[in-house]
Image 1 (cartoon, rainbow, N blue to C red):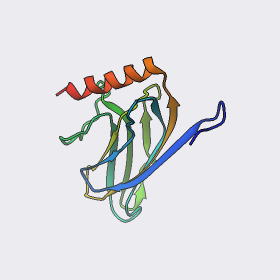
Image 2: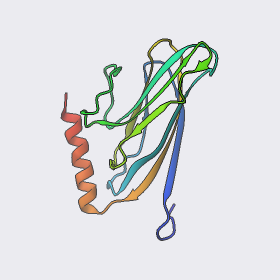
Image 3: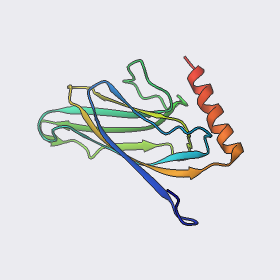
Image 4: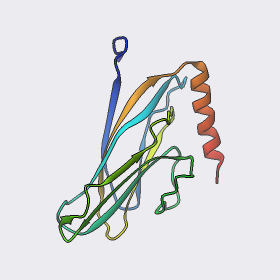
Length: 152
């Protein structure tokens, strides 16, 4: 689906992740000429107001096989973080979302959710801006992805 000249194509994804679970968002193409940038990232617990929770939801360039309960901004594989806390059926905050806006990627991304104090599933909503990449940009994005997968 093509947009008219100058228009922005937005793709949306939503889902529910079990506590300590990972969802894969499939974005890769054969030629890598389509890139994406995160524009919006929101989370909410499965049963708002029902029980205490501290949700940490992260978006990764690679599959976070090991539990990622710590947030480390020096990790170049991290694309975004959302945090939401609720205690005794009262929202402690509306949530905090941090997205690294300048990151453009052209491969699959992974969403990981953890409830630090409970075991509630996490609902997420993501908006991605689709970006057309030229051959050089596509090559750089793909090589960054390959390099990220080599990091232990």
